[in-house]
Length: 391
Image (tube, rainbow, N blue to C red; front, side):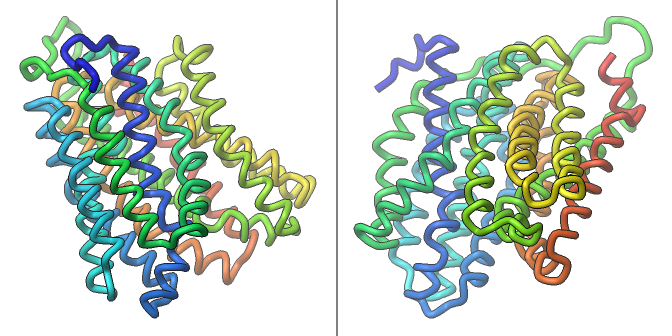
């Protein structure tokens, strides 16, 4: 058990990042491995299983502002611990279901745990602990948790092959209690709620300007979340539509995880002196640059695209936590982040279905939509309501 009252920032970052790795692996990355087995056992289609997972994403969107407000007021430690208990119960319930209604109920409960325990909750917790100096801690947590799919997919696949999908759910439930819960005990209790910033002279942003900037960020994160989830769900098929072989498509897709981690290392080092707005612009630009390679060299561009797309994803995960902190400050950060993130969760819930239909009909031309959304997000990051707050 970690002595949370004495835990330094490095200990908190490593422990919280480790808990995030386990929670992401046990939830977000679970359906990709178990969906077909669950569908076969319950006599459902895989798309029906993913529909239940989408319900969890809708729950996250609904609860994100509430979770943020709770952490703003009381700190994040207790909510993170509660999330581990909810995820353990939800995963146990998932392993016991016998029909679609049970499956849906289990994923709704898991959605509550995800809303209280994944990145947004972790970022807000760090903001409450470290204020405006939370950026390196946020980057560190995403760096550790960047290995969630690297850990989760092979472990889930091995457990599925050896024991079955129900036992896999029970095993992940156990990790929440035995590992993730103690890791989150390392998070210190937060002090009193942070006061709003004091004006220091010069023109101050109005409440309307605040709202406009928040909605612009929400639109940016929603578009990028839609693209990221669509790529995660359908990238191998998309790459095959460009002419890549199935083996080459899978090999290229495997580069995304390392690219995300490499980009986060870069942000932690060379890019940490740059304003998060600059990093966010860079993150939105990498995916369209990757898609431009396909008209030039065809299927051979798949590895380059995967590296650029993964790098953009890695940077944007950090920007989602650090950019609102830099633009609005730590006071009320959790509520703001919850409101900004909610449209993105809705977009992510719809993305697998919509992108799947596009790939079925248009094949590789679907890259035009993903690149276009990134270009639009890039342009919104130059809007006056955002650039004025940077200064």
